[in-house]
Amino acid sequence: MNLEKYLTITPEIQEAIKSNKPIVALESTILSHGMPYPENVVFAHKVEDIVRKEGAIPATTAIIGGKLKVGLTADELEIMCKGENIGKVSRRDVAVYLATEKAGATTVATTMMIAAMAGIRIFATGGIGGVHRGAAETMDISADLQELAHTPVAVVGAGAKSLLDIGLTLEYLETMGVPVIGVDTDDFPAFYCRKSGYKVDFNAKDEKLIARILKTKWDLDIEGGALIANPIPTEYELDFDEMEGVINRALELAKEQGIRGKETTPFLLKHIKDMTEGVSFASNLQLAYNNAKVASKIAVEYAKLS
Image (cartoon, rainbow, N blue to C red; front, top):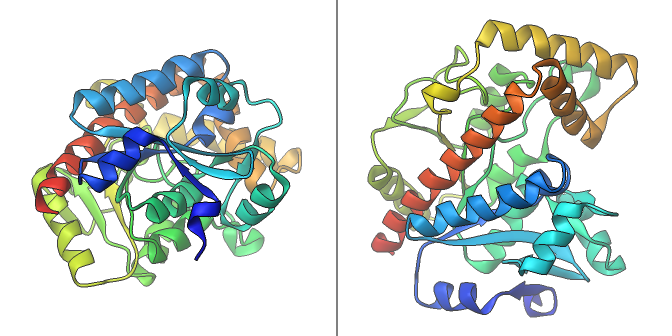
C-alpha cells in the first residue's frame, strides 16, 4: 500500500503518533455541509481547543489537493469552512477525489478510513449515520455502518441521528459484530435526546473502562471498530416526542422535493433547525463539544494502555 503518496500528516500529529500520545480524529463534513460560515470556523477551533484541554491532540481530516489530510492548517480549515466547491466524500468517492484533486469534506466513514491509515484509534463526531426510515424501499443505509464493521476506530457520538430508524440501525450493527458501548448509560441516545427507547450492549461507567475494552478488542485482532454512545448533556436535551413530530414533517418535505442519497441528511438537518427556530442547532453544537471531550478522555486512557 503506497500511503505516503496520498497521506499528509502534520508534523505535530506525526510526532504524537511516534510518541504514542493521545490523538482524536475529527471530521470535516460537519464544517462544510453542516453549519453556516463563519459559525463553523468558531466551532472548528472550539472543538480543537476542547481536545487539547483534555490532554489530547486534534486531527481534523479532509481531502485537499490530491491528499488525505490528517490535521489542517488554519488556512486549510478556512477552506473547509467556506465550503466553496467542497464535496461530501464517503468511501466510494475517495479515489475519485484524490485522482482529480478535488477538495472534499470527510464523512464519518471516510474519517475512520483516514484515521486508521494514520494509526489513530479514537474519533469524535456528532452522531453516526445508519439505516434511514423507509430503507426497506429505498435501501438508504449509511456507509458508516460498514466502516464500523471493518475499520479499527472507535467512534464517539451521541448515538445515531434521530432522523434515522434507530432500531434497524442497531440491528445492523449487531449483525456486523459492532459493539455499542454506552458512556455511563443503559439507554442508546438519539442525538438530540438522551434516550431512544433502545438499549446499548454494555454500560461502561468511565472512560478508563472504555479504553480497556477497546484495547482488549484490538489485542485480539477482532475486526472493526466500536460505537461509543455518549448522551447529550441533560441541560441541552430536547423533548423526544416533539422532535419526532419535527422529524416527520422534515421527512415529508424531503419526499415531496425528491431528496435522496447523500443529500438527505444535510437537507433534513437544515429543515429541522428551521422548524425548531435554531434550538436543535444549538443542541447539535453542545453534543459535539461533549463528544470531543469524552473522546479525548478515552484517547488519554487508551494511550496509557498502549
